[in-house]
Length: 437
Image: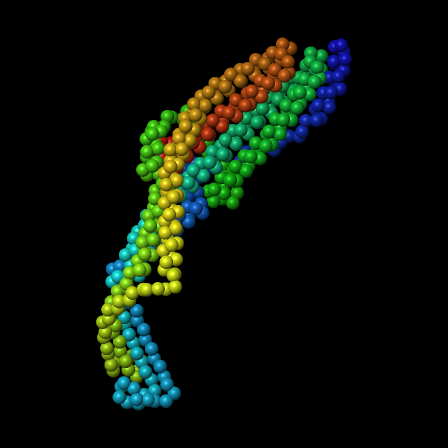
């Protein structure tokens, strides 16, 4: 029986060796620039389209505010001149025949009431407040997306190393199994089982290396690069407890959360726009002062006239366009109010999800560390027992799989805690741990 086992091993081992796939590409960043988390956040804030759009809207709202103030405090001033030549001379206001007429005027107009004057001022103030709140919320949304891309690179890098360790261990065990098969101490199917494990490990290495490559490209795009970027390692110290309770975090979110502030500011802007449209029902009262000069020469000096006019006009009917504008503004106000109320109702749910996610992931880190220690020891014992012939190949493979799963769980728990913290900070609009990435 032992002779047949030896012959089977002698036949199968060369086949096994030829069936193992060729070596895989080496891991590494491929010369990609390495960035820290703080640098990645700064660069992403400068190039993210949403952040750029928010800053542009803020700058535009600032000019709208200045324009409304200028319209409230200063008149509109215009100057005009005209020089006309006719084909035949005629008696003009100069008292002598002339074929030319020149006029010049300077007019100042100031609207005392109407035309949405005060409503435009309120609308511009609300627009500026809304733009500021939106820009603040956009900064934290961009930071959260950057954190996700950054942690994705680190997590995929660690998972790639876990897969490489799995392949190394499987290859070592395959070498041991070959020796045992050739010595007649194990059956050839042990080597076949380990060959399958080697091939699974190689496939996992390919998959993780591919995911790592994609995550590096995602981080590079997030920070404004056309190619990949690598993430500088972070400390692996245990996550500290959150400095606020869940109830305090929910209350702070309801009071000054960036997303809620943006929703409230958007509602105020819509309400101000509705007020500006309603002012279309008021009469327009305009004061105008005009200084004019007339002559037959280009710079008129012959006749000068000054005038002051107070004009009152009452809009009565314009085909329903005014009512349509008011209806549209009212609809936008109602939509903004509903969105604000929905954001307020969702505060407790969003904060509880992120807060409990952080606590669960932080607790899971310590449990995962223990799991890795136990699984590593179990794998060591099973490996020793298999080499001594006291354990089966299935026990060894089960220990190998358990160790890989424990290491992957530790990596996922560590970065799940970081992502939950980034979510909490984005909701609150502030950093919870100063000087800590």
